[in-house]
Amino acid sequence: MPVTPTPLLDTSRSSAGPVDIRLVVTDMDGTLLDDAKRIPDGLWPMLVELRRRGVLFSPASGRQYATLARQFEDVAEGMVFIAENGAYVVRDGAELSSDPLDRSVAAGVARAVRRLAADGGDAGAVVCGKRAAYVERTDEAFLAEVRRYYVEHRVVDDVTAVDDDFVKVAVFDFGSAERSTAPALAPFAATHQVVVSGEHWVDVMNPTANKGTALRGLQRALGVSPAQTMVFGDYLNDLEMLDAADWSFAMANAHPEVIRRARHVAPSNNDNGVLRTIARVLGLD
Image (cartoon, rainbow, N blue to C red; front, side):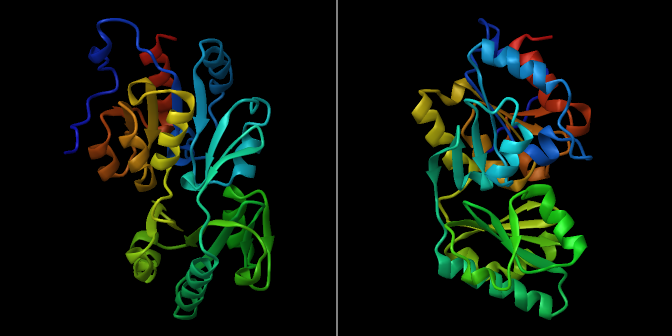
C-alpha cells in the first residue's frame, strides 16, 4: 500500500538519535536541477561534507553516463553514476552493472518511431549505447534536446545498424509523450518497460531495468540498508527507486503518482529542495 507522504520537516522517525544515512541518491531533471537545468551552487561544498561523513552521493538519471560524468567531472572520483534509468551503472569508469537491450527490440522501437513520424507525430528516437547515443533526425530543434542529455551522440543513417551495446531507447516527443508516443509504443509494454520519464520523453528498456533495481544492487554491494538510504525523485521513472529507500522524497513539483508513492515531500526543484532536505535531515544547517 502507498504510504501517505509526510512533510519535508517531519523527521520524527529519527527522534531517538542522529539519522544514519550512508547513501544519497537523486534524480537530476526536475529534482536536483532547477527548470533552467542548473546544478545548485550549494551542492559542491555539500559534497565535500558528505564525503567527510562517509556518505556516498549518487546521481540517478535517464541521462547517459558520459553526460553525468561531465557534469560532475571535478568530483567524480569514487562517485557512482546510475545512468540510463538504471540500465548502466558506472564507478570510476568501470561498469558495475548493466542490463543490455536486445538489438531486435531496439530496432523495433526505432521503426515504430519512424512510423509515428510518418503519421504526423513530431518525435525522434535516441538509441542509447554504452559508448554513445545514436539518432537519425538531423533538425536542430531535435538535436538541441538530444544534447541536453547525451553529450556523446552521433547522427547516423540507420540507428538499427549501429555496432554498440544498447541499454535503452529514448524517444523525444515535442508534444505530450504521455498522450502520443507512449500509446504508439504500447505493443512493447507486454515484454518490456515503456516508461514516461518526463513531459516529452518515453524510455523503452528491459523489464528488469530501472533505477530501483540498480539502487538495490548498489545497496547490496555497499552493505547499505534502505533505512540508510535517502532518495529524491519527481517522475514516473523514479518510482522503483523510491521504493528502495526508507527516506524517500518526492519533490513538491513531482508527478502525482510519485508524491503518492514517496514517504515524504521535499520543496520543489526550483526551491533547492534536494539540498535543503539533506541539510535538514543530516543536521548540516
